[in-house]
Image (cartoon, rainbow, N blue to C red; front, side, top):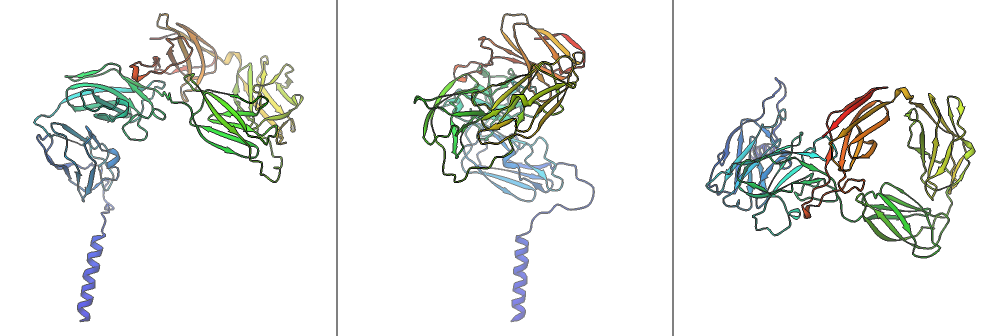
Length: 534
């Protein structure tokens, strides 16, 4: 009896271990560099009149599919989701609803299936079949670019929207009938498309819901309808950001000394109005944060009207009650005053130069006589020191030294005190000054027409705007620090000195942006002239 019981437990343990077994890649031997190959598919490649609700693929080796759901693109989108079953060397996708009738489906697996050992992805793996008696074969091939950057947007979604559909939702509110993602160079290639009339759009689809999100995603479109009765190569689509929704308050926090408001995006400018006569608060704006200070000290709730202007020069008015949490029992001890500057220590600077000192809270005491600028051991006497804002959080120091090699900004301890009695320690910036013979020059012209243009000189690495000019053709940038640059031209058609986005509902494209991809390599004491931008 005991032997029978032991024998039963041995069998039970064996079954349990086998049920929990996992596939483990073998160790040792030469490195496997061969990707898995398909040995069979169901249905067969380019089958017609397929009526089942599943597909199967079998491979010549063990496979790994952890990224399959993220990588697999099915076009057009099936009527339902799928249940994925994986065996050692095969997969099965079972759909809860039947595929649409008389439709050609393409399953593009991209890098979703890899060998188990070395994670080599299966190459160019696609399965194509039709639920009707015809395999659609039309193609649309093109490119997507960033309107303001020479780098191609990686994996931007490109969508084709059938205009003959019975779907009554506006295009921007529904998923595309066909979609694909761009490669690393911005190229896309639709295959096995059905003839018809389509609109072609592209957006970055950050949230992967196949619907354009104006607040967070870049967007681009073609104005012309695509009549698809032959293979097409449409014009390049250029993506741009255009959030036209009103700026909103995301959150607000009341403290004893501050009331902080965070907007859902950074406004171009902020102005404060007070409906009640006599009300006034000190405040500062930093990116998307607006901070009101309890200075002078206020125990009342103050109603404010916050006028926020976005990048499109649209102004919205937000009403907000400002109050301070005055339950703090102890007054905070004075701390070290932090000074931030637009100029880094040991940074090369031009002349004339402006230092911009930024403070986190209003300054109440400023001893200008304790702030000095020395150029080559000689103190600059005509230094101009002034506040740029009413709340005294932005201090500007303008200097116009003659030919110098080194400039030193020195702020003595105790020179600056804020409303909390925090004061500064010694603050010093040492900068090397570019000499006249170190500068370069960049000049040229654009196409000869009367269109107003904004010519921007960009740092080739960071894409930050170094300088800009308003012109119709000729441009010249003088006193340019040696380095690598790009030029960007905005065709300012409405002459408002800024770039204006398009409107899809009006089928209006944004103002054109031209970025020659050739990097301008400027050396010291060198002039690059006769540049031509078409």
